[in-house]
Length: 322
Image 1 (cartoon, helix red, strand yellow):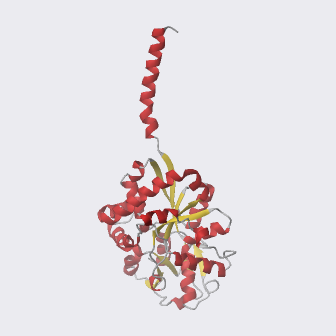
Image 2 (spheres, rainbow, N blue to C red):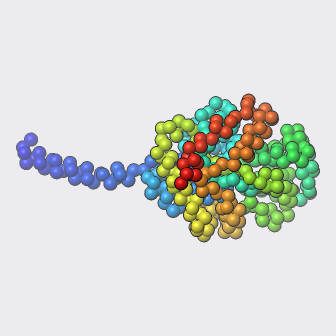
Image 3 (tube, rainbow, N blue to C red):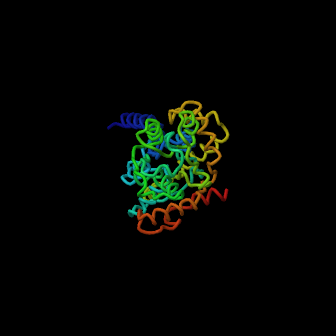
């Protein structure tokens, strides 16, 4: 190769590298984030996605909804989903099965659920011998329904039949049609339940005023291998929390698009949850301790797990120091 041809080739190579450099720089880390339900409590993630916060952190985030927390946990275990946004029971069940998984951040510390029923059922005691819809067996909806029934003097394992049929919209419709007798619904559906003539049998906040409704949890090996990506995700999520509180209209629009709520339902969901979003990721531990006790007493788990076995506190503590 002559000197002139060598220089020409080198110039061509430099041009190719320069052309490809922006594409390489633009490549983003891919993350799949799963939700255990169609809940307004997840609004910070929707806002972060719509506002481009994830993208600015170098992430390409795919948001996926599951019909239950159990399905979400299974997807995390398989590795198809990297970050879970769900409730404590499925986390505890996974840890009980030997999965190295822990909660890292609190999403909402509110008890937003009510037990609703067909018009003919007027008290919790009337549910004896009836059918209660839950998202899936072993889910948060079953755990909370059982907790209410036990508190009101029924045997939650013998006095009712649990029917696993999916998320809140499906369960709400099942109560409306009479195919089941009762179920838990979230705050965004309270007004619609009243308008439909259904009974709000019991507001769970009377029994459990503070509750670790939703938490961010993930596998420990993901955290060990891809912690910088998780930290980037968490920074964007925290921006979503701040924006949700500062810009109600943007958060409500995010709920409408992500959850397909109409404006009235999105606004009701926003008002129900926004004050429960912790800036520092604090998790209402007493509720998790109660869940562990209940699951142990029912034989669902083999022993009582400590909070340190279930929660990685480092990110919460870092946020609390700021």
